[in-house]
Length: 173
Image (cartoon, rainbow, N blue to C red; front, side, top):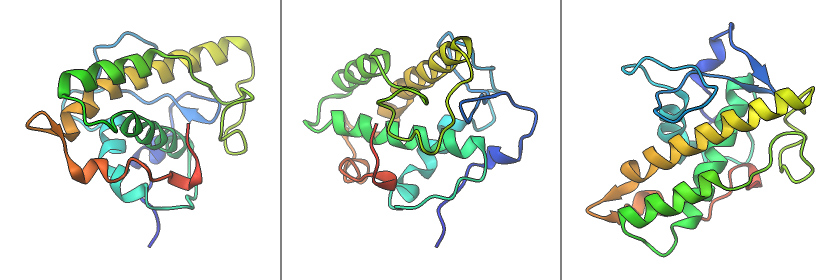
């Protein structure tokens, strides 16, 4: 059974930096991402919906730049779940994930980025800064949406937390 791919691979008129497509997102977080329609599914919704199925795969065929963004978001969700190992309350989880989202992180082209073989480096410093801002905006929006998705009655759901030690493609951010 093959892994699920992003439905945004068919969209052709998108900007791409470092092999990552700049897809519109539904967000109130400031940043360079285009604003998506509030009723349509965006890449963050898609990553949350496909996470539990895709995290089980060790191989993933990349079919477009949207798949590279999906890979990054799945690895970031895994990192977020790893930070919630002590079963904090919903408010504590929001604080933990908010801090993680604003922390320093590697982008494609950095020596510490784990997927440099799959992602081309940005061509110049301006593109690298724009990519860092976009990924930061995605991480902040994920920090807002993820706790609402996994928490039930102020406790993290076991059907999400069982994936906290799984490594998608044997990689981690």
